[in-house]
Length: 506
Image 1 (cartoon, one colour):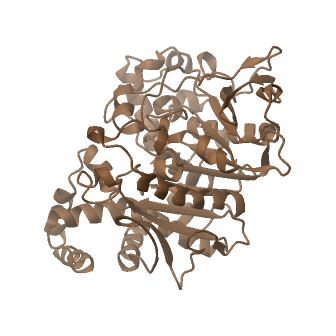
Image 2 (image 1 turned 45 degrees about the vertical axis):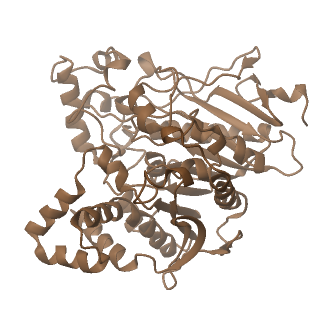
């Protein structure tokens, strides 16, 4: 139904007026929970008060408070207006009355839990919706507004129900909105794929471990999740006290005093008062650390796709992490391990070796760990490796695909992106490769189930099995080839997994 009446949709909370983008219906800035401000700051998201008039849904909602310059530089563009009133989502759908309900794809943006928004250009839902999916992008609380612990706030809960991961609860509230309302947009509430990149991918993994998400989504895609351990609640509580002291509050500051602090005061805090790019382990949302849960194969039984990029170490450089210096520290402490790494990688330049080791320890090992956990719970998983670079930018990315650079390919949003570096436009080959890659994301969302053994596509992509260990390389040596790799990086990832297991036990 492609007519004017289709621009108005009735949801459980009230009627919405959307807009058309070519032949797609688009609804922006839909509130999925009440504004978490005033007395609702640092509380679980509350229901939206229903409205009686038709609500305009043609403009994006505000994003959580953050560093605009930082988001412009590395987060995907301008996040728009900022406010504590930021719990909004956006929907793109090709048909509100399809013959058969459409697969739903819910996107969680990255940005280290401190920057980002669902309205950024790389996340435009139009291309995937054009393939036949209902696409949802979500804003959620960031920084200290989304991830915070303090003894005064803990006193507001029973001991077993303390909440610190408000941003994760926002994501859960958005998934609950999808279950209530997505049929009105033509979506299938029984076929919801949750996908995200970087901290968005960490969110997918965290929600796979949360006792609060059963039945809210049915599969997940994990793009470039990192291996940093979650913040222990004890450490988060101490940081919360330190933050309060920084703002001149007493040791026994009250919840009311904390909520009186300006909303825009937190994002500018620097280490050690800034939050880490990980959730807090030990509250009602995430009772156990995510890595510990996956090591024990106690995650929810859902099909998962997971992968990483060929030059994830690019993000470490941005945070001034010197991978070569870290490698030299290892050499000085344990010369055998240093020699073992040189042998395993067959890289004899320490700068290049440090970059590769940092990439694999921080990123490459996570998809492999997830695949093993999937195998152990009898659920299918698909591992990918992204190694394509735009034709006009290959001299700028000599080591491969940077952290986050796969997003406009998998979402097929190259045409929505601003001009690349030094006015180097995307080429016809880039756009054709993006079509080929996003096919797999849509196919996973449409078809994958616990009974799926192979994803159909240009190359048939078999589910990961311990004895076969097949990885789909999306790109090869920066070129537009698709390659199935067997036992890809297996020896080094086994070593890093053992190292991670030791860290988790500690």
